[in-house]
Image 1 (cartoon, rainbow, N blue to C red):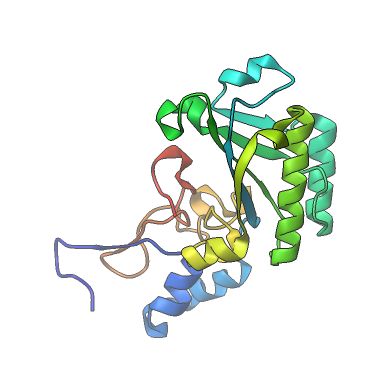
Image 2 (cartoon, one colour):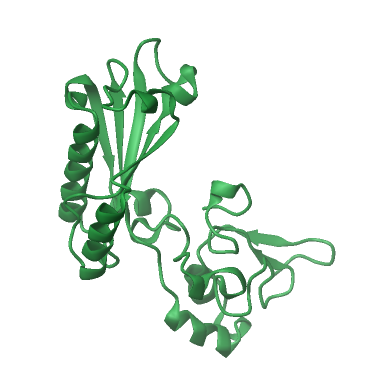
Length: 225
């Protein structure tokens, strides 16, 4: 079933899929299956992609040269956003990460235009298309507040909802792009399960190589979905 000596399998899948679906039950220790009952996914993601006819009209000119901008990140806004997520309410004023792709890489779009994206999160357990589209519309408003006239620059727009993200990649359960929460109780030696803060699994020559493995998502260039 598994490679011989000197060879290995690297599983680029979620921890629940690996231990519950892909491996036979007798290959997984009971303690691992028991720990999976406490596994927590990260928040569903909603991403909006924009093609813009010109540079983004930021209120703050200092943002024009930034590759990535955090919007709604002052203390009051973050408290309100987290309260919405905790209460299971679709945020009306979401904290938003915004990427100016042509600013970072001029090859992304024709000269004088801008290719950009923005994303935020829904509450855990809220990943239906209606809620996701409501959040996408709220993201548009957040950007407009910081860049008046932004909407007039948009020549094409597309949404990536949790359902679409999971359809494209089964690892992205309900749009969770980090392979599980990055909260302390499921990080480092506890990622993806207590005592498994390393690529090795209980099965010889089988390694977990997805975002579910420590240290998490692919921003740092180690593990990733």
